[in-house]
Amino acid sequence: MAIPVVDFSKVGNGASPEERAATMALIAKHCEEWGFFQLVNHGISEELLERVKKVCTEFFKLEREQNFKESPLFKSLSDLPDGQKLENVDWEDVITLLDHNEWPSKTLGFKETMAEYRAELRKLAGQVMEVMDENLGLPKSYIKNAFNSGGEEAFFGTKVSHYPPCPKPEMVNGLRAHTDAGGVIMLFQDDVVGGLEVLKDGEWFDVQPMRNSIVINTGDQVEVLSNGRYKSAWHRVQAKPDGNRRSIASFYNPSMKATIAPAPQLVENGEVGVDAFGYPEFVFGDYMSVYAEQKFDPKEPRFQAVRAM
Image 1 (cartoon, helix red, strand yellow):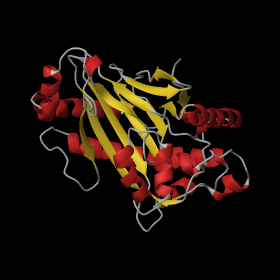
Image 2 (image 1 turned 90 degrees about the vertical axis):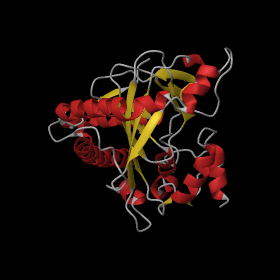
Image 3 (image 1 turned 180 degrees about the vertical axis):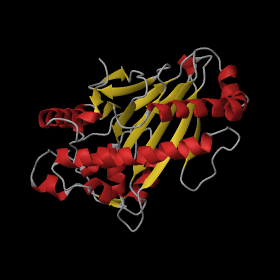
Image 4 (image 1 turned 45 degrees about the vertical axis):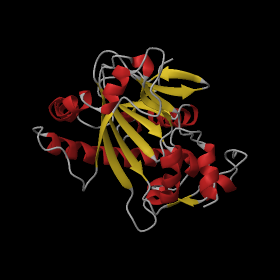
């Protein structure tokens, strides 16, 4: 079974009312049933995306690959006896790009290209959230305003990851199964090397590589705001023996001071059933302190824990 693919141009001004209605319904269905879908015709130029692929690949080879091969993780896997598995680690090299932290400087064009890319992704996040608002029957910009509450702007980060060829892929995880803590996640994944999987109805499905698509998935905070209508999906990355998987994930998350709770309209209108434990109101920073300790554990206890804070 393939991960759903959505033509995002069909929600824009150039689409007919019938095309737009059908596409909006598809997005709502995928948010409810998968928590994952792929966007094509999303408005980000192929020229920019090709540059992103180029500079991120060059960055890893120039600035990260040798250090990874000399890392304790690499050595631990090499020394591990057959039949055992490395626990509590991930076969992943990662850096995070924020507006104000230090970015790689040796790779020609990296800073300029990634700054341009992040600006486009931030705009796309706003468009995706407006579609979610409309599909949920919420006022325009409801989710965005919820994320910006607390006197601070929403957090926008970009995680540049590589999953190098693994000599013993059955003995380590690429990235352990988890749900994402935040809001809307936009992934520009490798279009050749697979490995990303999403859990649906008790089965793991490949998130198929597609050239220059953007994978969208919903995080825990969208699940809460939607009162459980949109579930955050469990996903993982499998280590692979061949290829160097490139993965660029951008996260549009609430500010740390934002107060998150189910949208009153969805609770009052009874549009969706609430799980037995319900969703509490909480400050996102408190949730993140719980998530930091329980990222790879079931998510329901996280909501229970933050309720008690």
